[in-house]
Structures are given as structure tokens and as C-alpha cells.
Length: 121
Image 1: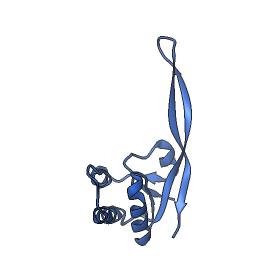
Image 2 (image 1 turned 180 degrees about the horizontal axis):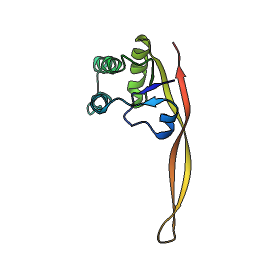
Image 3 (image 1 turned 30 degrees about the horizontal axis):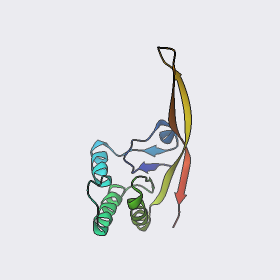
Image 4 (image 1 turned 45 degrees about the vertical axis):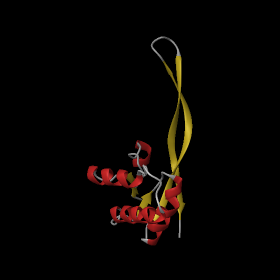
């Protein structure tokens, strides 16, 4: 299954291995602008942006979304109305420890993609 990435972030290696692909550079730039809210958005702004994102996904059957919680329900509904199958990435946080040059240990939380939560109409 091929899934178009409609999130702010580029697909991870694990997501790519699961069939996720990104828009081209121009499409990612447009998508990023549509997903970024610097001011409190009105309902009509949310709807307009969701419709513009749906247009970016015109050739995709499956899409992955994620981002501002206040926008996801509008975006999900719009994509479903446009015949898209909507998926959210599911990740687990894994602790990774790395030995530092000074002998100390640095512990970092890494998100590992483990699957999708799919939304069906």
C-alpha cells in the first residue's frame, strides 16, 4: 500500500519501508504553509486549508495525517469526503543510550514507527 505523507515532517525510514512517500519539494513547501498556524484560525480558514490539502492529495488513495489537534478533525473529514483512506502514524518511544567521548552516557527518546491507525468512513 502507498500512503501519501501529509504531515509537517518528512517520512522516516520505517514509514518509507511501510509504503509512505512524500510530496516533491514544492508540494512539501505548500503543505507546510497550509499546516502552519501563526494566528488563531477561524472555522472557514480551517475548511479552506483542508480543501487545499485535499487538492494536493488528488492522485492519492491513502494519506497519512498528523499535526495540530484542532485541525485534524477538519482535515480528516475533508479527506474522507474526497474519497481518501486516512491513516495516523503509530509510534513507540524507545530509549537509546549512547556512550559519550567523556565516558558519560547520553539517553535519548526516539520515536519508532510501528504501524498505522486507520480511519474508515
